[in-house]
Image 1 (cartoon, rainbow, N blue to C red):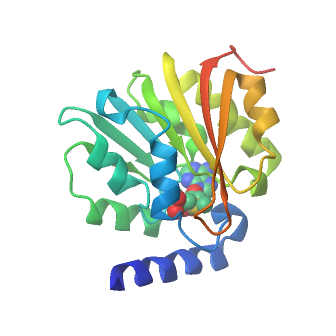
Image 2 (tube, protein in one colour):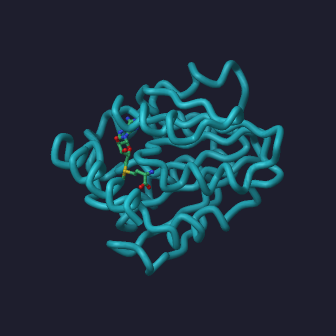
Length: 192
Ligand SMILES: C[S@@+](CC[C@H](N)C(=O)[O-])C[C@H]1O[C@@H](n2cnc3c(N)ncnc32)[C@H](O)[C@@H]1O
């Protein structure tokens, strides 16, 4: 309970410092995290990538669902949040990287992800940065892989459809604000 309160405070502080980068005043609720991760079977994944890990709302649940030999690479651009994540989850399967999601390729050692979990605030990012990151997503996953995206509006659906042949959407109401969840499959090739 105390750590949940402290996390909310940390998150709020990060939002005040970089509102467009953080894009939300509260971490994702545990219900929305479960709804999002239920869109795929993490137990069979070998490599999972998390983008915009923040205070770790998704990180712990991803680790709980992963197999013993799987790997999770979590990218977070805020150095303080990245440090907190690495200290909190001392799990040999987890690698925390403090870098921008657009450079994801550089941290996978040539491997492709079975699942990408993205909590990046695409609609508030600078448009060129948003496009660069979105272009990386299909390239970073295996042909059978899935990219899960959480947003607070349906606005990104069109841009996701430009990059993936299949974009499945559901709404998770138990989040502030309600969350739009997208499961994106079958990359359509390099984006224009
Ligand atoms: C909406 S918060 C989500 C945090 C957490 N995953 C959650 O669901 O509560 C977005 C996070 O993405 C991070 N972020 C923003 N731009 C990023 C980028 N280009 N690369 C990596 N992380 C980024 C922010 O620092 C912030 O922690």
